[in-house]
View 1: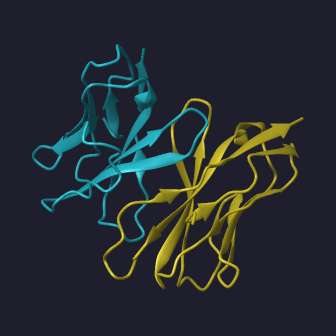
View 2: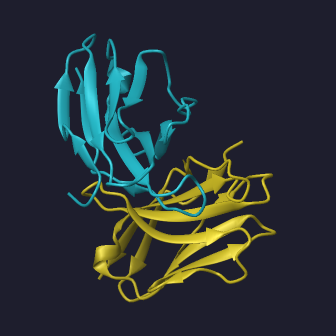
Length: 115
Length: 118
């Protein structure tokens, strides 16, 4: 597809389970970002990938959160031992440039509900 | 300190009127960029407009314009001739280090919910 694709669009899980969220960025985009948006709130930065550089993990809230990007394209965000406060929409975005003036193109998000 | 502050949690405007959404920012970096995004109830994030700190002119994109006041560190979004479809959440965001190559993530404000009424 032409845009950023995220899956699943909705995920309901039980507290303590692990979840994986997937992001397929726009073809050719070198930068990939994960953000979290809690209900009615702004976007909270989680992690940023740029090419083969070491990712910027400064926004990950705890060591239960991790992400990888394979082959410079698809990314997976993993949340281990989920907690109820992890419930949020997880947004992935990609950009064609490393910072600079390039805007981010967002996917439609993965809504995670932890029961 | 908050890097991006949006002080209006909610705004109402009548159709065809203009509306200004406020955004102030805090940075000591000389090179930065300011972005506005729209998020309708469907949840998608739509890029609206960009202003660079060194741009001489205020940015405009159709009905959107950015009132950039560098000394005041404000970057207010002006929407002219509001339409019902403009009802959405609007986010201001900043990227620092535009010219030094250090810029990557966008830092977002908490948003302003705009409601356009007949």
